[in-house]
Image (cartoon, rainbow, N blue to C red; front, side, top):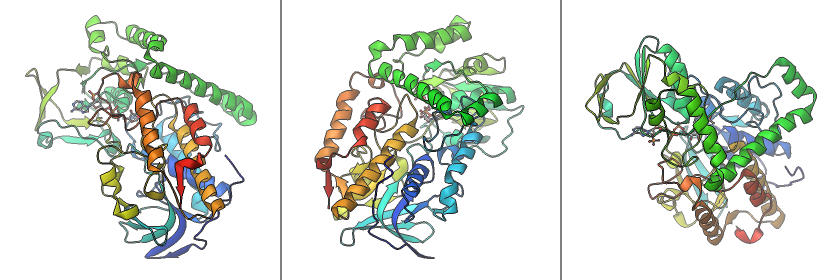
Length: 501
Ligand code: N01
């Protein structure tokens, strides 16, 4: 990170009153993105920003996803910010409570500086072209005037509900995996889980031990890799704390291993080793040929997110667990009716049906130059230059915006590249004495065209249904390349790609 950035604020004095905050930079969202941005600003000596969080606690996706078994499928020593290493991770793959605790420690300096405001939900942001500031409104009625708006709301937090007939007819309890009711006890109950994505493969093994009957409704079989999770002993935790190069070596090797996975996804002809590993995992864990056939994917590996689990297949073979792949015809008051005519009685129905990416603009009005509404501009397809800036929306920067999710590596590496790029933009704006910056429409088009060209022929374009694609089959979510190539692309400013106004 460039520590010598100056980024002098143009709105120099913060002003706070019950109904108006004036600050230089408003960061929306206190998950990994917002906190990484805030910490980077603190590090260069900036105090003229505020971070606004809708919930009462920081953490974003790791605060929201508390379902049993919730964990990260990227090893912890990589799934952490490079400026905030944690040598004390207790496992190779951390569980949700430990990651959430880590996020709380990330927030400490921001909280201590009095720069974090919780219980504050963004409703609108309007660019005032004359004053060159964003006029921001919230559900609290408190308004914010800020020169720079950082949208760090994340892409995956609005639950997706499936369009299954008569969903409201169910009279038992039902909820989405990302809205797990505190203390829910499923012991002795008949439970159904719809979906077999990353969330489902984590929660199914835990529910299998509690429920009297567990029915896993699978629409599409998925590729699953072994998950070599191990506890990290006190000895190694002390060693990582005492010898930082040891921790860095582990972090670096995990990173490089996952970058190798990128090459298999970008060039499916090179993915033979990964298919072999996943097939061997299925063969080793599932003996019955019929079940194995029903669990064998029919789409190219990597087209959907490759799942990582060593206890999902064993859980499916327990006596109280059934894999149901007949398709759900409709939901009834006391269970589900299947397409093959069978009925399954349930007490609880859990939707592990994922998220609506880019639904972050639901209930939020962002208005840029000449009254352009971002919701209109993004209706067909969300587009941002490098996934960060949007043409016609000065000083608006997304973290984990369109086309910057990864299918293979830690998204925190992407966030760090984006934070660095935003600081470069702010610095250059200050150096030129300009008041705002946004990408040119041409640069934005070129970026999206480049993404589309590279998408063709990759595993992600393999014809499956995934949250990476919009209704037209366009990739709206993923960066097409390695994490390193994104870092290279964002490390320097190409000044011709921006309008400094
Ligand atoms: O959601 P998903 P998720 N009838 O969209 C099924 C991140 N994440 O919450 O495959 C029947 O992957 C759907 O079926 P199909 C990660 O980025 C990270 O599991 O479309 N089924 C699918 O099986 C991940 O990619 C971690 O045929 C229906 C499932 O619901 C993202 O979150 C952990 C249906 C949805 O799977 C989302 O994962 C967890 C219908 N009408 C999540 N509609 C980490 O460890 C949908 N489905 C970092």
